[in-house]
Length: 307
Image (tube, rainbow, N blue to C red; front, side, top):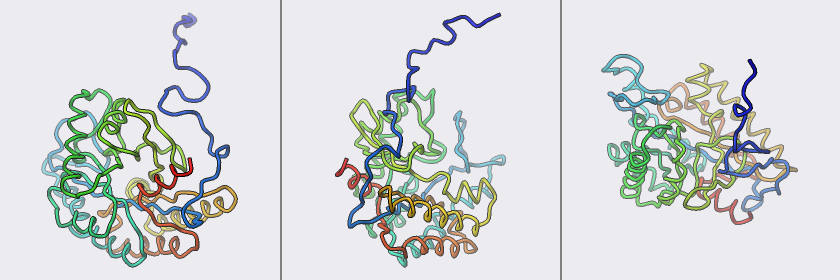
C-alpha cells in the first residue's frame, strides 16, 4: 500500500540545510580570503594528545583507537601511551626545526598526568585546544545535557588552570557531538570547533550563546585515517600531504587563501620509522613561499578581521 502523506512531512525540509546551525554557502561564491603578509596557505598542524583509559567503561559510544581486547589490553594501552612518553617529543623537534607553530588538542587527563609535557607545549607558544576529559568520555546523542555540561566544564576548567591559556578552540573526542555540544562549548567561551569537516575555510555556526566558527580540521589528511585505518604506508601519507598542499597552493593563486590542515597522533607519527617521512612532508610545505604557519586561533582572527 502507498505511504501516507504525513510520512514525507518534515518541517525543516527546505533549500540548503535541514537545520539552522549555519546558512547554505558554496565556497566558489564567497569572497576570497587574504592571509597576513600576503600568504597563500595557512598551515595548521594539530598533534593530538590523548589518554585512552585501560578500562574504558560501558558508555554507548567508543572512540576509534580505543582498547580492543579483553581487560587489561596492555598492548594497545601502552602503544597509545608511547605517544605521550616518546612520540610527541620527536614531533616537537621537527616543529622546532621547521618553524611550525602548532595547535595541540589535549585531553584533560593528559594535562593532569603529564604536566611537564603541557609545559613543553605552552613554553613554545603553541595553542592548547580543548579535547574533552579523555578518550573514553565522549559526547553523543542521548547523553543527558547536564552531564555533558559537566564534562565540558571539567575538561576546559582543567586545561585553562594548568595551561594558563584561555583555550578558545574545541575538538570533541572522536569528533563526536550531541545536539547540545555546540551550545555547551559556546557557553563556556569556545570560539571555534574542529568537529565539522564540510568546508575548506572557516564558517559561522549559530549557538544559544551566539556565533562561533567551524574550522576545517583534517580528518582525511590524518595519520590515523591514512596509516592506522586505511593501512597505507608512511610514504603514502607523506605523498598525500604534498599532493594536498600542491592543490591548495595552486587554487590560492586565483581563488584566495586556503587552509592546509594536518592532523598527527604522536603514537603513530612519532614512531622512529615514520618521523622522517612526516618531517620531509612538512618541510616540503614550509619551504614554499607564501606559507603561514599559524594556530587555529590566529587563523580565525585573521578570517574574522575581513569577514
